[in-house]
Length: 307
Figure 1 (cartoon, rainbow, N blue to C red):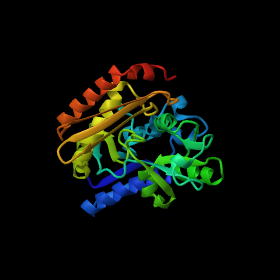
Figure 2: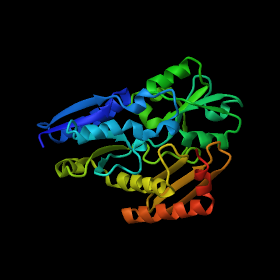
Figure 3: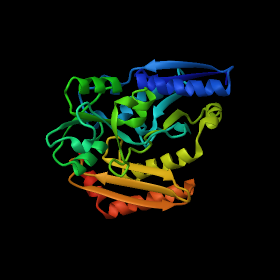
């Protein structure tokens, strides 16, 4: 290949992510031509309704996938937490980059940590996963939906519409906005979304030349962890909007993973953990075991209750 066209949403964060891939490609092959195709997706247009009610985070990727089908783009770049765990037929994730910060971040101009927010305090988030865990552990907080790009969410906070908001730390750090973070939530307080902190490259399965090109960006241990997390959600029948989280990481001797399923209102929160070998087979075994453990605790009952 002598040219690559990257399809991306036009938000500042999405463009940063696309340019990150562009820079890595050019560093590997300065002769390569790399162009960026900016697009507005349905998910970007429908900001007044919760994602759970309009089709989930897949609304952020389907226009990008259509651009690849039409031949207008070769790849699309996503935050892996936004990629549905069941890809449309004919697509694959050709590379998952080295993972960045997986934690959720609390941003506030009034309080130094989430625990300081008094009962009745208004917390904004776009994520049912975050909402359910916060409601479970910080009883009495008023959690409200918050849509829009990172800058829009920060503006709504600064206008006084919220006492604090929750965002992915990696997104703020990528945009140079880490100074807005007042607290990084520990992963045992807010288990991350599957794939959080990792960038992925999507392409058509039939484009072997694209797959071969992006092997150089694929980070083996991150892929093992992210694929294990995505399997947890897939086996549970979850979507990008389900109150499900999983976080896998390599320790010195094992692959370790935490997972949870919650009721949307936080009244119940089921958490499990385990370890296995540090390879893809170990990730698959561990994911299946944690799903079995969650189901034995009643996970499907909670998920079946989501409208």
